[in-house]
Image (cartoon, rainbow, N blue to C red; front, side, top):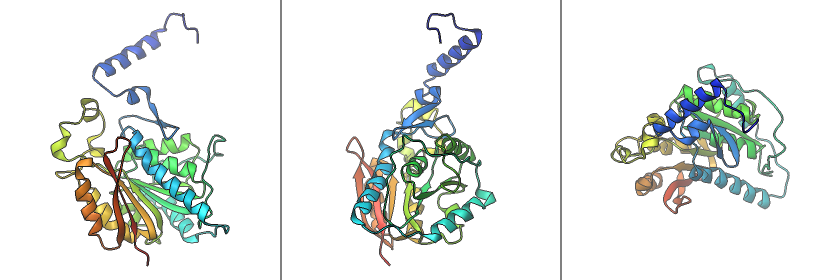
Length: 297
């Protein structure tokens, strides 16, 4: 492109549109139509929340856990046929199916974690939104199969576009539409099979919503932000349903509002089948994540 040439009429129209949107405090990530998450390009628009750096901690925790597992295991991995069967069922579940994904080779720039744990791993990402967590995990864990759920068909269409962008086919990453854990629970053979259940659900308490920055409050989808009067309307059922879906010693990780950390921790510690519940901090040292695991059988 010639830097000193006059702008075309179409370019001027596009520039005016962007300026008008910026004057209404629309986030830069939406104006650009993409943003970076865990070093990856993620498409962004008003169908889903903007990926944020603190959420990368969920991806990093899973990758670190798999690196530790790989280092501790000397024998080659055995396959987990039940994981493949669950995902095959997900691919065939028409009511929950989102946009089809195309298959293509993985990028040479990927640096996947090679785990010697039994494979494939089975991971669920609840309230997937743009799909940033699910795409990152599927891309960096080549032995993983990921099931991503969201109640919003619009969000799932964006997530599917991000999966296509990163050449992740349906046998690696499947999208299911429905409320929280419901589309997962409907899959035959899913009970007790998840290695990881991760979620970044709506968690802002109603009393805190007016204090949310204007560019977030007015432009990002409220459905993906508001967590009800206490901020726990979505978190509570995820915690309650996790033990039935996780395999023994499987991991639960949920992003939360720092103001609700003590309440969320109390819920997790009182949930039968979950052990080791604790709160982890984010990049600003604020309480941001619940981490727990299913008790051994």
